[in-house]
Image (cartoon, rainbow over all chains, first blue to last red; front, side, top):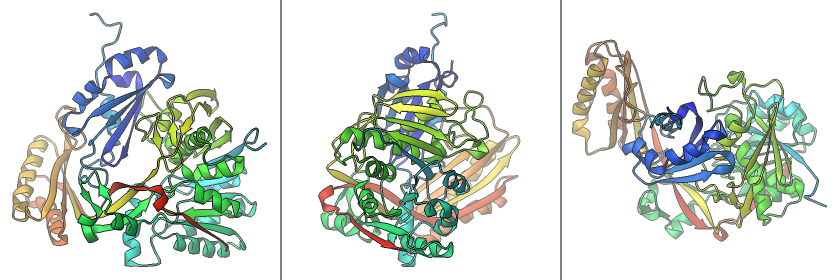
Length: 106
Length: 445
């Protein structure tokens, strides 16, 4: 199951730091999100797009997670030559992550 | 008692320097809000405005004021108020634009407050401020530093409103402060009442990005769709002590619901418990969202702690020139032909390697956004994109032209476009806030 099937996301920029917040549509999926969408998982998925650390903050009251990706924008919005300098599209890349649904056979 | 039972309604008028103005008139004429806040600046806008001002001393302000004022005629005539960072690099010129436009629409005696003090070029030069993201200092960059503007908070705005200003403008007024100022002024909140400042900052954060709260940068069919995305309504907020209800005008498109609110509240936030602004260290970690239906959402639970002792400064740095050039390839073998084209461009630019600071070539449709992180099937078309940064205008033009000459490259290249623009980077610095005194000046148009 793709994360996109259960969650919405948005990415933003400050200098060379990208943040991506992710919220499940249905609160019932929040434990699965917390368990599987770890900072390491996001770090691995983004590979060399991100040069620095990935930090995760939990937002249990709104059933979301906020990821802060350091040195993720090729030197910063105004410095990078990337086609998407703001990393607006990062919100879509994170939704491509595969999750194992709880109903799936072990 | 002030701050206990009073309410205030505010709306967003603009999220950046080139935002559309066609919905401002409807909001202004709705008599629904007492204040319109206009965020006119993104990270790089002010540095670019400073470059314009250096070329012509009467420019560097927001360029929409003449078109905006006629839309606000009734709004201003009824005594309602406007706050914005229209000044960009030249607040006095913005004031003059307002005065001229007000005269043209037959309004006289409108009090305009101007906030000065955010331009800290001489300060960061004197301090030789560190630029942590670049690993250097202001002094080391010398005359490549084209601008330095501190994010300043609500205090100057409140000061102008206390002097009965009806239009308040400045340069790098922090985005949420455009709303924090009016809220604190109208509801009688002190600027060191941190929990209330945190709440007011939440309101500002929800309004500052315009339709980003109501369905902009949001749809992902079939999972997330909103009605009439061509006509997104700007958000408006009814603010009370500890509570805000966000909505939009009836008849507009988009959506105000729990998810549009969540995605905006945590947009461009790092630690949700410590969102730093010039006004407060806001804490959005305990926010509770109550979807009331019918495009109304009530939000509570924002808190705050003491404001940071330093102010963030964005330093604009001349990076030379940025050249881009694109060419499309389609059909069988399009990826291989585009890669061949890339080889040609790289080879042709080799003689300029010493002058080119950075060069990248991507294939849109294959790897331009995510590199190799999301492989797909073979595309039916790709678009080669070359981007180069160089201190030489001549080299920049050469780099761009090389993509045009790909018409004589691999078969079937079409649709070349090129551009060469000044490359202005912005990078953060931090200065003690007591070194950035803000000065206000209120006068009648």
